Amino acid sequence: MNVTIKYFASIREAIGQGSESRETSALTLAGLRDELLAASPAHAASLARGRAVRMAVNQVMRDETALLADGCEVAFFPPVTGG
Figure 1 (spheres, rainbow, N blue to C red):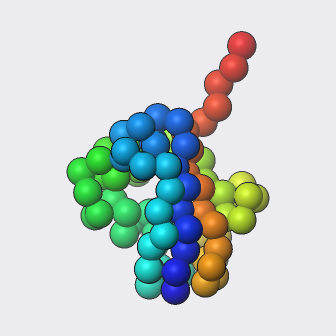
Figure 2: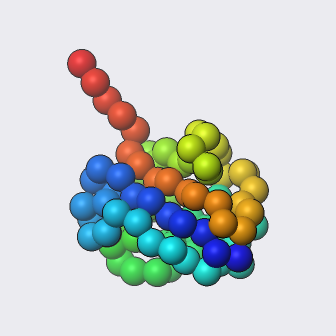
């Protein structure tokens, strides 16, 4: 299936792009994250399991068990802090 991935804030800066279209065999966000971890050192550092990373599917916040569908939009971003 094909998904659109969007990266925000420090993740976008580390990876060097704001979005990409990717062919994936992953069925869940966890599987997609695993594929991305193997994609490049920048992906591995930015999306590492020990890092706090927020995720959304079709603009709805989800956890790693969320199912993916062909054509969906996935977003990765760091937690938002404010003051």
